[in-house]
Length: 77
Image 1 (cartoon, one colour):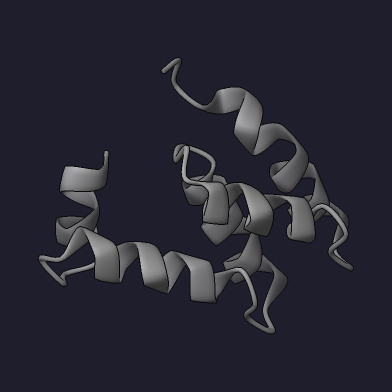
Image 2 (tube, helix red, strand yellow; image 1 turned 180 degrees about the vertical axis):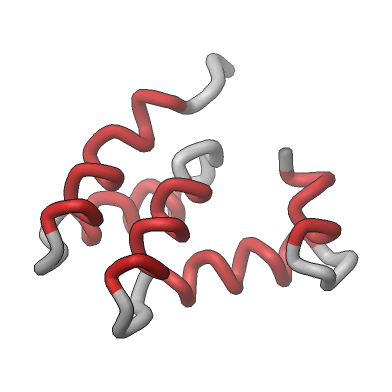
């Protein structure tokens, strides 16, 4: 997934795309936060786990739901 992430965001740089997703988790729009949290759920990085834990306390219930279930959807390592 990481190799395709840069292409998905048009950056050609997976690290930049991951940074965009991390930023998206703090967006004012709940739909943006929810989508970012759902996409981040596929990553095993500690920083991503920290963000998912933080979003589990989001003001929007749909974001909280995604944050809670996203780690469960991670591919086995």
